[in-house]
Length: 163
Image 1 (cartoon, rainbow, N blue to C red):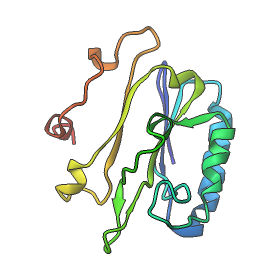
Image 2 (image 1 turned 120 degrees about the horizontal axis):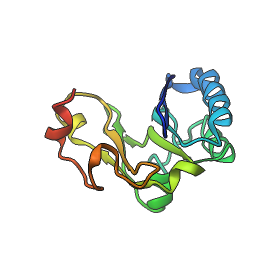
Image 3 (image 1 turned 90 degrees about the horizontal axis):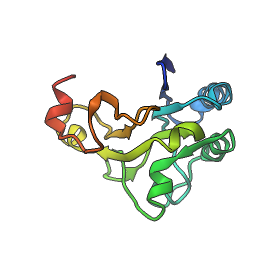
């Protein structure tokens, strides 16, 4: 877990290992969520966790209850909130089974500033990563868009010039 604090935004970057080995990591993320709850905070990354029968095709993830705990701590999965019936996967197994393992959870004070949340699959499809990237367009607290741009989906080529 990596924390970056900016003037009007706190970002917590998350990577969790597979299976039940991630339980102590989830506990640390929950502690961070409680700490940053009243601030504009984004928890984002590879959580290696899905919601039962929603973010995967009929599997049971033993750490799914943490998805409810993070929401109880005051953070919202805006992609799921805005796409309640959608199935979009951020990772595929070697058998071709899709899973939504990558998430962005927003504190209440940040959620209202989020214009869009979406997945970019081009990087995974190009072989740059085995995961799709979750992206968010967030307006500044003074209503000016971050980096002086309005809410638009940036082409993969534009994003990749910074990598």
